[in-house]
Length: 337
Image (tube, rainbow, N blue to C red; front, side):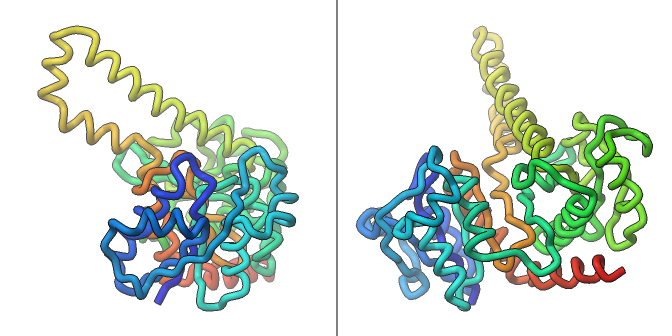
């Protein structure tokens, strides 16, 4: 049985999206159990009209919520009755709990992952690894996307190792294609960090390094994993997400501009909705915190129940395929070369 603890608060639409997403997952996966952490009365009220196996659901009361404007480290250290801290404590202390999903404060989740759970031995820094859809109807992962603003070549090398294993374990991508984010595709391009990292990735035969990638190629489908420092990764993913959402708004305005366009949109309705779902990053789950001792998934603050469901499926697959153990082995092997 895979047991996943859900931090029910912190997102824009909590707790209902967390609860509905988790119940959908538990109804599909018979070897999954869920622990909801949050305000017990509100959780029970949200559950009362849902059908599910009650023997596989637990509730732990937590009256406090960590807000987005609180200092993350201070919140993790002092708000012991918050849903996030109680979820972390359960994940840390209870060996039967495998993973945690939260759509709350990113900073607090990062702090809790490091201080409450801890890094896998040998991992210098953990990293977020979110995914986006690509033009060939596949996915691309970005590692790191914001956990580490400043990085060295060892960090980037470990991100490549951990991200490759994650894509293999959670999405079945065998030998994923790894690229280094840069300002040009030529090997000699970039700043000192990129120039130092390139030969290290090239020489490591355990990863499928295919060279540099310019940011405009992110959604091309030519790459499975993009390796970068957290500052550039965060800018990359947010600018891409924003561009996709603005493009959807532009399409909507275009179709409503005239009667002729509205009629055309009626004929294309099915295709338009498919395109909308394809471009909406919320339909692709969350970002795992790679490099810590237990599985933690961070969903976007504006997550829907579908997002939370996909986050739980990510965590479930990571546990089923023993990702933590695989990362530990691969990191230690790389350090001993």
